[in-house]
Amino acid sequence: MIKPRIDAWGADLPEKVQWDIYDTARALPWPKAVVDQLEALGVVRLPTRASWYRFLARMRQADAERRIDKIAQSVAEAQGVADRAGIKATVFVETLKTLAIDRAMGGDDKSATALAAAAASIWDRAQKEKELELKTAAQATKDAALALAREKFEAAEKRLNAVQGAVDAPQLTDAERVAKIKSIFGMK
Amino acid sequence: MDALDKHVIKTALKTLQAAGGSGIKKPALLDQIDLAAGYTTTTEQREAAFSLMRDRGWITFYMEPIFHDQRWTLTERGLTALEGM
Image 1 (cartoon, each protein chain N blue to C red):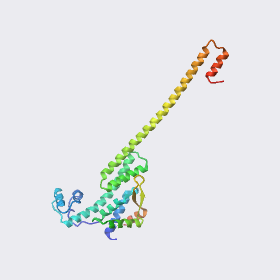
Image 2 (cartoon, rainbow over the protein chains, first blue to last red):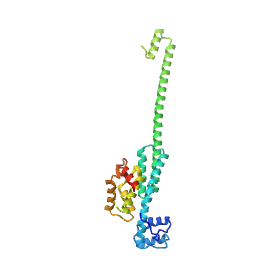
Image 3 (cartoon, chains in turn yellow, purple):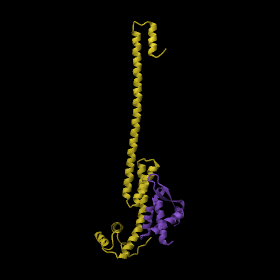
Image 4 (tube, helix red, strand yellow):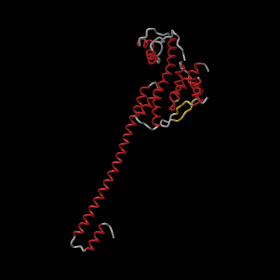
């Protein structure tokens, strides 16, 4: 790790300003664009070329450390989101973590969290739809059972009416009546 | 191995430790090696650092089941090496 000299350029600036300079000016061509950017950021003491590259080297190493923190944070957040959403599937949780890590490695830890939250919402929605499907299937089974019960009841009613008709028919003899009733009930 | 090499390797191992079982894709790890060096490194230098960790059994890879990517993780030996640095 590069230790900054006490008089190193940029070391006396607030940490946030150092990161702002690093994030905005590092990819710019030396010297004009960098100097313009530094002046826009309100930096008074401009660096020499050598001190600028030493500053960048120091900040790059700090950036590597910062990414480690972001990774740890993103993994924890993805795990937290998965826990809050009640996601049990290990593969899904691990995928969330890998996506969060990939985003954090690209320096985009905010979208890592958003991505995990979005995935959790999708999971929640899918679970609800699955529950709805199960409920619909259960209702269909109930409806079928009810229709069957109704059919049975109507058949029983029909047989009862037929028996009543047989009992009330004056033209039938007792033997014929019994035979008729037996035939209504399917008996021989 | 000089102090900067050690720092670079240590940072790479710490990165893998932070990623845990999920691991990191090789390009991202090489990028992290480049950052940790401070100065822009060549492809050969990055690959050399990566090979050193792989050949010593400090890192290993697995195939991620959803996206089918190779992801590198820290091994027990790697963790021991990191603790010793």
